[in-house]
Length: 294
Image (cartoon, rainbow, N blue to C red; front, side, top):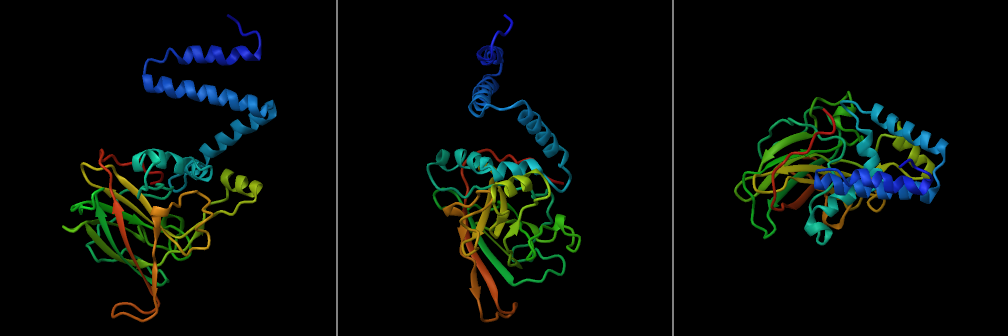
């Protein structure tokens, strides 16, 4: 039957969605249409606003490149990335988890580094950082032979793919846990940084009067057959933006104690920092995520 009035649109679309053969796709599309149509009615979306919205989505897609992912930034800035993460980990959000956001800067094929080695590959001024971490299962048993991919921003707040002054793969490395589930490495102390604001996300933050800052953090992606791939970020609890992360990624379980030491050690000047942290993996299938950049 032809549609006679606006109230007829949603039932007509839902009837079509109900014919979807794949049950999960049917569930998702039915819910999407219900909520999307409800949103349009709730805000009484104008034609001009609808045209603006489609233009914004097109712009977000056009901003994608080998080094930038505007959709990931937007999903984080709306809290969607964090919500999806917590809904799917830690007993579906009922317990704390080491899982966090992948972020827009993970790259495949980070160089392999021996335990205790450094991930500093070019002149990177900053206070020395020594990380001693452990990977365990839910019962606290060490997980040996896990592959650990780590990366973080430099002390000027840029990842190496954003900064022509840094060497390729600077502050990135891949380790293997020992029989005690441990991996260790040397780096430089990272700082908080602003997310890129030259696109749609930047305009949204400006319109809302929000700052673009992420608190200082260390990324890790840990793979071991029999376990769900652990994607994690450990945050500096003393960062001034720890309570107002623009990407809503900070949870209590991810607060790290980056300890400052004011006496030199044989292999490092003062001040230097240390981090001791335990990552907890959950049972599951070891499936790598799709890299957001190349």
